[in-house]
Amino acid sequence: MKLGKLIANADCKLIQGSGDIEISDIVYDSRKVIKNCLFVCLVGSNFDGHKFIEKAVEGGAAAVLVSEDINVGQIGIVKTDDTRKALALISKEYFGRPSESLVTVGITGTKGKTTTAFMIKEILEKGGIKTGVIGTLGIMTGNELIKTANTTPESYEIQKAMRDMVNKGCKCAVMEVSSQGLKLYRTNGIYFDYGLFTNLSHDHIGGVEHASMEEYIECKSRLFKQCKVGIVNVDDKVTPTIIKHNACEKVENFGFGENAELRAKNEHLISKSGYIGVHFETEGTVNMSVDVDIPGKFNVYNALGAIAVCRHFDISEQNIYDGLNEVKVKGRVETVKVNGNYTLLIDYAHNALSMENVLETLREYHPKRLITLFGAGGNRSKDRRYEMGEISGKLSDLSVITEDNSRFEDVMDIIADIKVGLSKTHGKYIVIPDRTDAIRYCIENAQDGDIIVLAGKGHEDYQDKMGVKTHYDEREVIKAIIGGDSNG
Image (cartoon, rainbow, N blue to C red; front, side, top):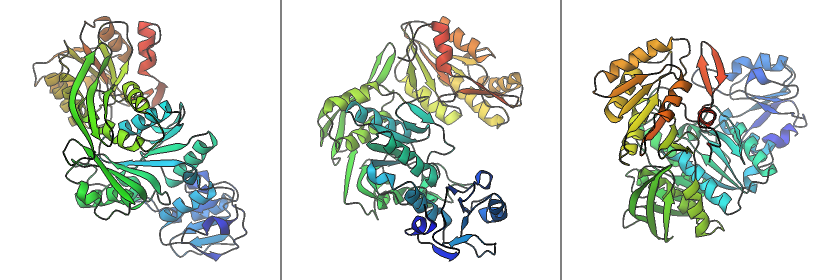
């Protein structure tokens, strides 16, 4: 694409060179520069792309996009006030404005983004609407998953992913829109058809993320300045602030309260062998009865948000029911099919808070025994290990202590730290350093009515030991232990 066309709608000015320069690609990492690319100088808390211009030119860049005055040889120079904002708009143009060929759903909030995104995907695909997802687990098109570094990737990756979705026949794209993604303008140039707010709690404050709660809320609220229909959790106390300055054509809401347009009622937990979830009914904009195959009453909110979005599509209530009844989110209290009369779950909980949330949720199902298998990452805070040991000791009937990305530490040293936390409780525990042996022990000693949670790895498919990452997927391990198809 010619440089002039690429930057035409990006609030940029060509200050050196010709708009007729042919651009082969857009690159913002100097290590990935290719001949005739446009090199974009992003500025972050720990880096400044302007310092790598010379390297980019040596690598064959035909033009650079800058926000500072520079003096460089005979290449194209494009200047803008904010290269991140411009990168999003230029990437949109480069990939042919793919979001305009999709129905787009953006989801923001502290918790529930991933689960709600996959609920929407499952429901829409039950209705024959092929849907892509961009979020914490990566970029998913059909059954293909490409891992990403961030919940909301850089704008170039978003536009590239959306173009891929269009090319593969997707009609809808669902995106987890993080506060960081909004702060750094990664979704700039996308006008979402639907924006969804799940909830907000004190998180991501401090460090390089957000200076204050006020900034965190303000960043979240930006989604509702770039979407057509806003859909919000009316029960969250921050909601009025989130939508105060919205630019939506329409704002809808959901929740439990009488003022909710889509209301949930009569919720209760469901527990049977291999299935722990929640049941509820809805009234208002949708009237139906729903079973959700993910544990915890908080998932009623996630499911309500999904219903509130999906009711706008040409699908049936049966599609909604089937989607929620069968939804699986990889590594998020994910049920794995087993042969016995017990429930086996895989979850990503790898710190004390997430472990406490999961175990307290599972306690509500009154298992015969709640068994927690977990380890802790090497070369990380010892406090995390003490805290995880204490939480598991308090909430589990049995803790099975094992390895989990020990990195450059001896796994037995990590386990010794976990035992410090366990010693503060009366919880029973067993130490089995090899994770596969530990999983085998849990399966072979399972009793009717047990809930076993394998915590820590979740969607990860590797073990990290002594600088070497080896393939390790707990689903495959379980399948090998029990035989047959464990993926349901």
